[in-house]
Length: 110
Image (cartoon, rainbow, N blue to C red; front, side):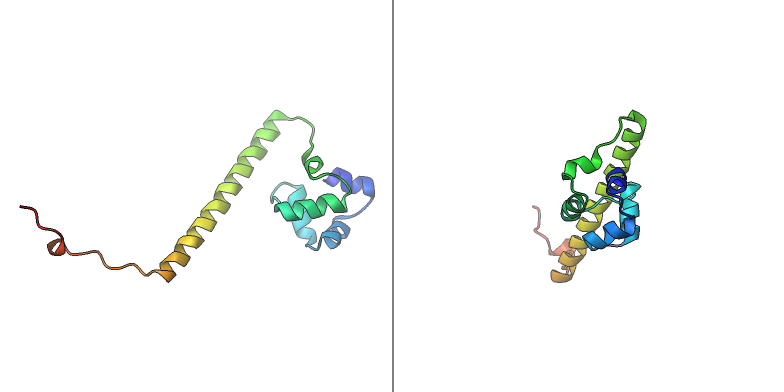
C-alpha cells in the first residue's frame, strides 16, 4: 500500500482524504497494526488505482509473514470475542435471567 501510494506521489493525508478516514488510520494500516474492513479496503484500492489483493503483495519474508499472520489471528479472535460478548450483553438485557429453581422445587425421585 505504501509503495503504491509513493508511486502515485500522494501522502497518507491525501489518501485518507480520498477514502474519508483519518491519516492515523492509514498509518496504522500501512504498519499492519490495523486491518481495514472489506469496504475500506475497496475504497483504498480504488484510490490507489490497484486491485485490492495487490495491497497485500509483499516481498517474501517467512519470519515476518508468520509474525503478521499471528498478529492478524489475534486481532480477528479479539474482534470476534468483542462481538460475541456484546451480543451476550444485548441478549442479557433483552431476556433477564430467571432465578435458578431451588432444589426442593424440582421433580422428585422415588
